[in-house]
Amino acid sequence: MHPIKPKASVLLLSAAWACCLLTAPLWAQQAAKLGAELTPVGAEKAGNKDGTIPAWGGGDVAAPGGYKAGQPRPNPYAADKPVTSITAANLDKYAAKLSPGQVQLIKSIKGYRMDVYPTHRSCGYPDVVYQRSKENVGFAKIGQNGYELVEAKTAGYPFPMPANGVEAMWNFKMRYQGEGLTWAYATAIPPKGGSGIGEPLIQEDYIMFPLSNPKNNTIAGAKGIESLYLSPYIAPAQFAGDVTLSHAYIGKTNDIWLYFASQRRVRRAPTYSYDAPILNDENLETIDQYTMYNGPLDRYDYKLVGKKEMIVPYNWNKVNAVENKIGDVVQPTFLNRDLTRYETHRVWEIEATVKQGARHTFPKRTFYLDEDSWQILVQDLYDGQGKVQRVMESGVVMATELPACVQEGYASYDLSLGRYIAERIPAGQKQSDWLAGREGRVKESMFEPDGLRRFATR
Image 1: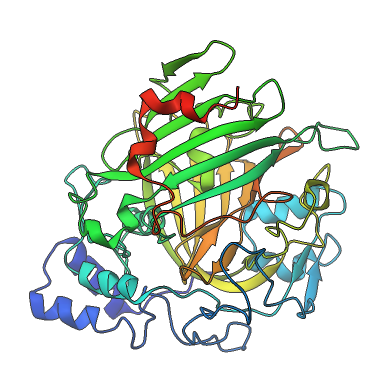
Image 2: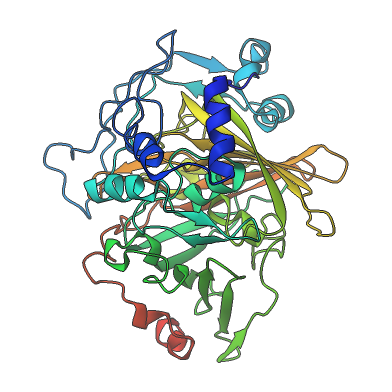
């Protein structure tokens, strides 16, 4: 794959940004590009030359006729037909627009295919997100340590025209998903070599995003809190009643508390971060893989490789439909290929390598961020020998009630073990409530360690 190379003038401008040489009038000129040749969050407005990527027209922000928040989300693209299907037989034709990990999935998993559909640039956001993103140009700042975000407007993307990989990663970490939500979902971990998918884990999450709340205005107003997360286990029986509480911060590792119903006590988890395995996930997912990336940025150096056209998971309405049964979505070796959807989009490629003197199970990771939403759509994780060990995929869904493109279900495939985990699959559960934070159904007072027992089911 060949990155879309920026013009020399853009490279010079990026260098100027990095050295903080731009004057206020020049920052204003850059900010003026948002909403002009660029979308208000920094993507290219224009389509591509061959027409596989259309021009951005504001996103599909209008709710389908008759739809109300809380109802099962309709699929606005249900009538679309695949334009091609990528299999092991024709992989060579499309490999240049796939990540190395995606190529290995097709090569190594029998029956794995990628159905490619017409591209819809569905993502759009509230006016406040556009305004705050523009205000962040010249205002948002990375600290002297090179990875911490020390200044930014909330409810906006801090670096809509990123000059380096850290800035691009902060766009993902501050991606707008509303002020908070509640949802229920299943996590399935199919046993290797079996014909079934095992017994899914069922959880109910309560989440707040202080950095997405316009009322907080700045990082200081959000108290430096990236997210507040509370998750009781509902099933199976051996985990029912257990609760996880997390406070994620901008400048330090997460604070995490665990309530175990069998012991009826709350415990602090002092080292539950980075590459620590997630509880009950059979060592198939680390803490910082959760939701495609989670936690501080201090373990890696992040190189902004460039922008490229890729075939990526997108508009996963079928995967995330609550009307599904879990067995409709999760199959023994991969997510149901009849439900997954792929489209051609432009993405930012960020190559992360472990810093000298630091350690991590995955010394190298490559992230592919959607230009329209800043969501991580694909991630390749490499082992110590330089081979792709894990591949993650997650397609956005347009939540018109916010409006915003949000992430729900995702999958992480471990090529070395021949297994995978399907995370946060809404099948068979109630529809996610993306307005819960805005409308007061989740509040900061819910996220206190002393109150964990209130959410236990036994």
